[in-house]
Image 1 (cartoon, rainbow, N blue to C red):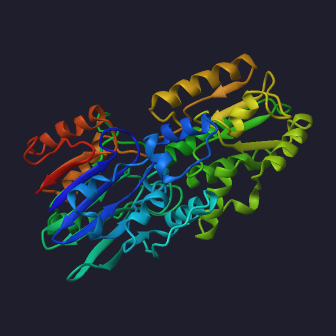
Image 2 (cartoon, one colour):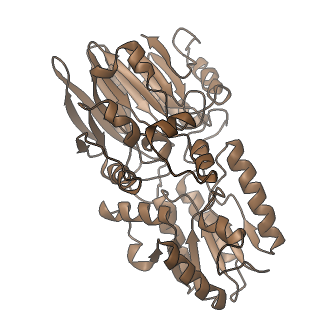
Image 3 (tube, helix red, strand yellow):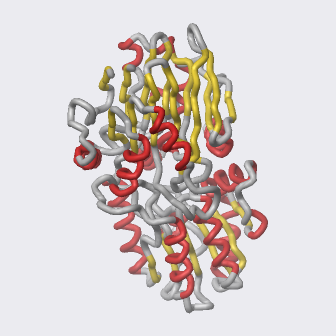
Length: 446
């Protein structure tokens, strides 16, 4: 078994891994590096073609597969979940693998299709919708390849661990996850199947190590729900504006915002293209139970018309909008910069049901935004949120269930991945022998 750790092993983003068994290669994920895309937006540069995306470092460097002679052997691209750092690069990269089918759960596939439409891209690969907890086959050079999608939980819906079954053993891809027994929407993780595969034997595990240095179990979405309900209960100014923002792909969180928002007797309005995209994708797969309880406004003209009304009727609405990372051009960014008919005033409320993605550009942008908002007199509640990434306790549980022969940390900088090497040492794994701290473009032979 040969594993090429293409991207996501030195940064938070552009996740991509290739596995070669015999003459067959399977690609896992193909994400973007969001800070690089934000810089493109700041330049007002709309040339989102493959060349420009590579130039700014937004795509994983899959050209390494050309050097290895693997490119023509790629039989499938499999995607674990719908976050852009896992799926966002596929529309730019897939044409290099014209014979490869793309496999993903329905919500993830709908998000992929929306990216292709929004960016006016062309992708000719066959799209194969797969169910969670299903076994699927793709054609290899000499035989069919068995690929299993196993339900897990994260901070979006229809997420899966992916197991590649082969004559060399099982390769297990566990990006991203936390073990949430009360996920809000959908089911708890399929622990039974994890244990079954652990008994069968796992050759290699590539695993989300982003928060492996936090010595705890990541809290459930049920905890975030209680935090959010408590935050809503403290908003007293009935005549002030009321805003909430979160990750557009966090459908379970949006569902709770709507649930608690209805108790305020305000009309709930979602603003922004990103929110519109993810809500519509969720509705297509039957997982947007709140859709009929909200209004969606996507286009700039619609948004500005609504904000003009909001300026006069501040106590009438609960506004859910984009901009929790202070992204350029987002609704919150434009309002804070004074570029809309609505202006924040003293006593208005804003809840950030999110955390800041730990990248310098995001941290700096949010610091600037928060200072401006406070100067404008807005009452801020930040970090009303729980993470979607496994803490050390979740990782210990996963290792105990899967009992892999080899562990490879992923989804972070070297510093963020290193604690998992220490956690794995508790189970007898030895660095460089059975636990491997990799880097982008490196080839591991097991």
